[in-house]
Image (cartoon, rainbow, N blue to C red; front, side, top):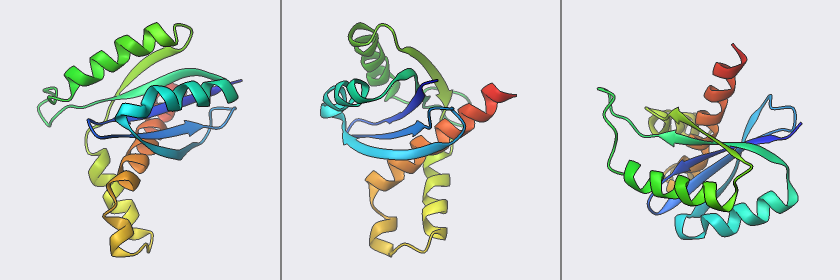
Length: 138
């Protein structure tokens, strides 16, 4: 099999998570500056077999899309051009940042580490991917 990679896309940073090759467990991988995301993906895809990416769908409580969606759509368009054989899926990312902050606070990490936005982005991507895996396994 191959991996599924999730991206919590942001204007400044992208949190990245990935499954194992059996697509059972999601693990946080990296936080990458958004301007370097394609360099990171090219390197990662050259070393690992990835069949699909899951990109967070930023909605509010009423289901309205966040303004970052415009940037995400441009990213997806370019991604499909750069990596035409990798499937793209979207998954609701509501509350993932809050959940990530909570999980990090419960982990016993220092206050400075808990407030690190890059860690929150990586954990958010992991939550998106784990929730996606649970949905497709039902």
